[in-house]
Length: 207
Image (cartoon, rainbow, N blue to C red):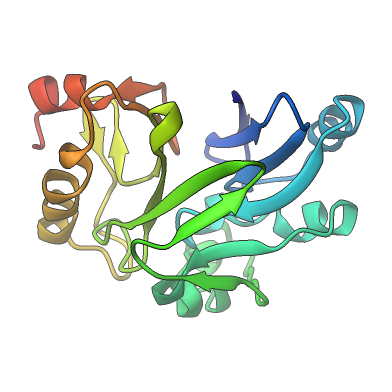
């Protein structure tokens, strides 16, 4: 497995390309924007896109979807509880924070604990309400990798002052679900640099 990080969109969102280097199949985690260079990179690398995984429905994780799907016909996955946020520009904050209302329909909905088999990898859906009510993380046990979206950052956690956010739920999600993962699990967050579970258990001041 190879993970490539691209910082895209108006607030510097981490978007990931996760590839199987044997088959050259890949999936994308979050799609903040869709610059031509991003598309060219995928094509030049000879990658075959199997899916887009959304950690949650905020504008800075979804606004590149339309452009991306024009280039690659791939299913988009998100937790079921985020359906309304994807379809409501007030809830996903595109209207209030950008003044550019954006919505997305047509996602395939996931439930907590579901296992996706994509690009030769088994990806576990871990629902982590708090940043949003339907936010989730994606865990690849075999690779000790967790894509945490805006649930957990290095030394911080996601904000909870936007619609459907709850700090108590966020802390419970991290302590009860993410901190139960092996300490060597590498965390690939929606913003800022990478971290791991051991570091966050020891140093995260919010937890």
